[in-house]
Image (cartoon, rainbow, N blue to C red; front, side, top):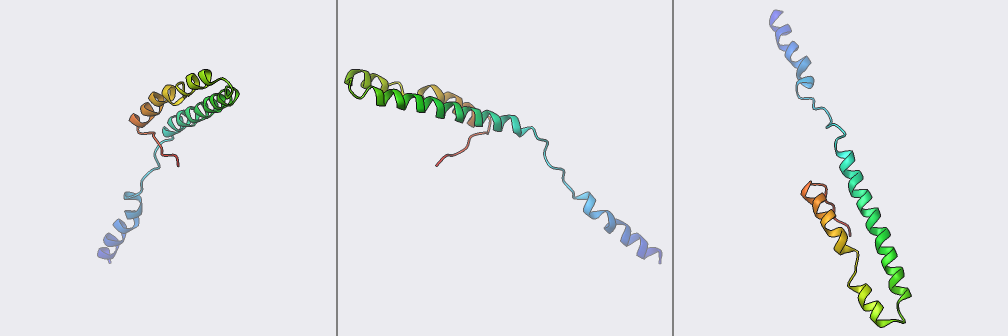
Length: 91
């Protein structure tokens, strides 16, 4: 009888021994950084496209605007997020 109790006792606590806690919500600020960077890039891209459409009649201004694509300014920000393991792929 005592042997039965000794075998059942460890089995009763087995699920608790292997239980893992969810990671702390420390990843939320990094996700917010990605979201904010993506929103800022989208806004800059829209502004750049609107300026490019407005400059269709002026070829010199259009050529200058094409060289000022917003990705040049945002690329380092996305690289920093990737280095912090917060990069994502967009299709």
